[in-house]
Amino acid sequence: MKILIVDDDLHVQRLYKDELSDEGYEVVVASSGDEALRLFESENPDLVTLDILLPDIDGIQILRQMKEKNPKIPIIMSTAYDYRDDFAVWASESYIVKSADLNELKSTIKKLLEKE
Image (cartoon, rainbow, N blue to C red):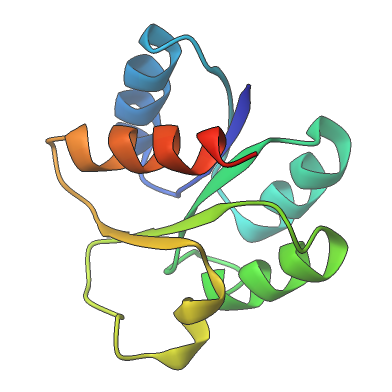
């Protein structure tokens, strides 16, 4: 299973990549919205973790574009801020507030990929 991590924070990228690789996933990392959309097309991931605040394109716009191309792809919105009241994030399968404890992220990924 391949996971695309979209986050502009290098520490988060490394943490997610190391932890998810240890769980047996193939991990691809993007640090901008443009790079994320390119990798989404070329890598065909099974799941995406998507930061909302990116330097070039808003994560919610990326979510919409990814869902237009592949409506069934599970996307987890990941952010340091609470956006749960923003209806736009409801198009994602899940929403996680970033934490150094990745248990919630890992269990959400496992749950979403088991549905496929």
